[in-house]
Length: 236
Length: 236
DNA sequence: GGGGACTTACTGAGCGTTCGCTCAACGTAG
DNA sequence: CTACGTTGAGCGAACGCTCAGTAAGTCCCC
Image (tube, rainbow over all chains, first blue to last red; front, side, top):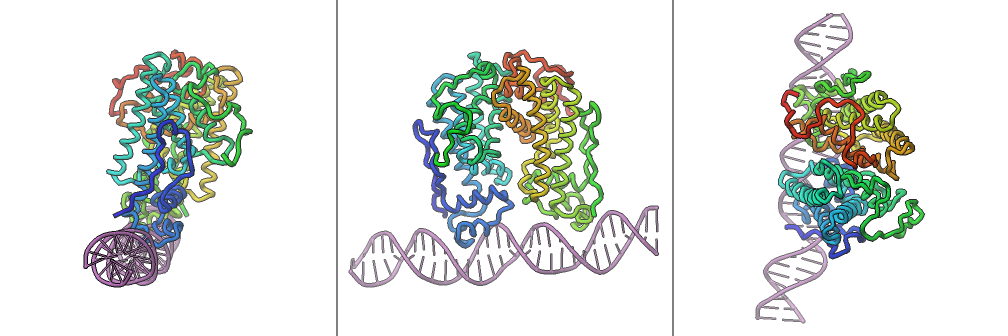
């Protein structure tokens, strides 16, 4: 019944760091904004239609119902972050430290660059059971990917946390948290936030160099490490 | 118009670790549960009234409107966690490490023991501006308390993180996250979760002993540190 | 290349239901 | 007799969703 929703251009080999403008079907775009402002139940179908500039039935022509809008948005989002995280892990190769850093960086970059999509994570409660199950399965898969990496690093002695599962959950929670407070016009760029969260995450999983204060990120940086906001530009 | 909402028994000197059964006005109790299940906008006044076992006007006799229910719940919650955190900090004295550990422990204990109240934090968006402003101010105050402690610890060389503000935000996010996944009948007690999060938080702020793997918590523990679930009992 | 068949994208009107909230009236305890 | 706590009935508005209908485009057959 529905036309296929326009998909995020999937990041192929090595492009998990690059973000263009968000390309969503106008209906999804405005639904996302409305859900962000008022939540799923706080948003009326009429409101979304009004934002798009069409009538209510036009929405129902493209999407089965209000629930399908949320489900499509959330699934698009989790699949994108999962693809990017997998790409980052692949690029990092076998070294658990590099892989951990790459995965955390990719997740935080997503949370910052796709804040409005990532923020919808708070609306899983409003998903009908089967939609929620599919979403949660994908999120669990991401968690397992990261946990495998941390446990491998622990076996190699590069991470010292005695509670890797708790550490990974905490790391993911604090990455997801970025979507709650990050602002494009804030003092830090997405890339700076990602770099900082790599450092914080390393501390959480117990990587000695992170605590010694002289960690060297084992992957190329986009910008020099100067922590100020001097390098900010509205064009980038 | 309203009767005073029944307040949580405030934890006076040294009792910030003790939690009795949650004592709330029945209307608030059922509103809390409904908001947890369906969110603020997803919950109808009729649903709350039905759970309480009264009619709709009876609700409006006790509380001005639906918004007042949420605002009261959230304010009760943040004030309780703030009181307990302050008590923990006071009890810990001047040592930044002990104070940090106590504050994190108190916050996590709250998130676990008062999960349903703490979970409502996701509903701040549904607060009217002035209610939200009051809530956010209290939350910011908590963050500043923790940040002051971390910065003092940094000055003394006990915490090594170069980004204390980011570290504190991350710590609070991961503490708050406990309310999202903790279950009373899960594998860990609230006390065990708190202990683990103290350890994780120490890593996040860069406390060397936490990463070396031989941290000693500078405050008395309730239970032996055995990490298994052997000591669990459904009675408490 | 003209014309019927079909598809796409959309509209105005309105269905039945539920929403937050209110009012006048009532029993009961002190 | 009064104040408290509650009730049945119901207000106007908004809710998600659906219907029949239509303009415009695409397709293929002859």
